[in-house]
Length: 249
Image 1: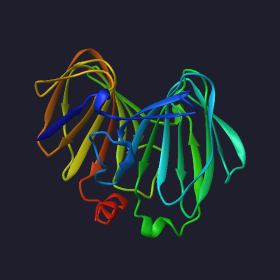
Image 2: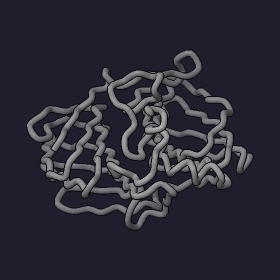
Image 3: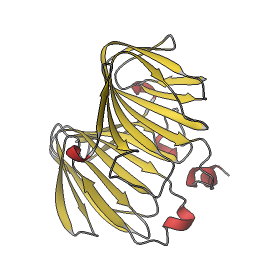
Image 4: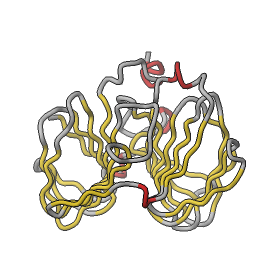
């Protein structure tokens, strides 16, 4: 099993509105720097935090599927498909299937924190599809509890959120003690440590670390108390040329 731990200070950094919104990016755009390039069909991943109330103005998207997961506080979203501002609170999720084009804007209240994650659903197909947008309240996602482990299924069995990008699985894991991480076949597993610290296969991790596990062997995570983890499983080979691959060619 290949294991990489990328601490926050080695992730790409960004900001909007003269530092009113700050970002660390486990996977940034090519110009952002950082130590991780896109892999599988996972193209971009940013943690954005509002230091004051602040709005990212109207801007366009095409092709990609763009998800926003509200981790803390409140945000609002505007898009040209619905032509209205819509509120989102902690635990809510929004998805933009950008298709043949859409514009949107975001407002983060002070203390609002989101993950924004872009996935590549095969742009040769999605660029010709009409754009669509959906909100999902926190209560719509199934929660499974067993042996001190609580899992919220954001994309996967029982979740209402569906994508053209597949196979893709996203969960939020609350761990108390030891956790055996079982990667899927031909899958890359990504973990973002939202809270807590511990070790994984003997290597130490802490808050805001980004962990990439590539390989089918099981790993063992042991937390020093409760650990809150955001997990994405993406295929090593999506079965189509991704945008990131075309950029590198």
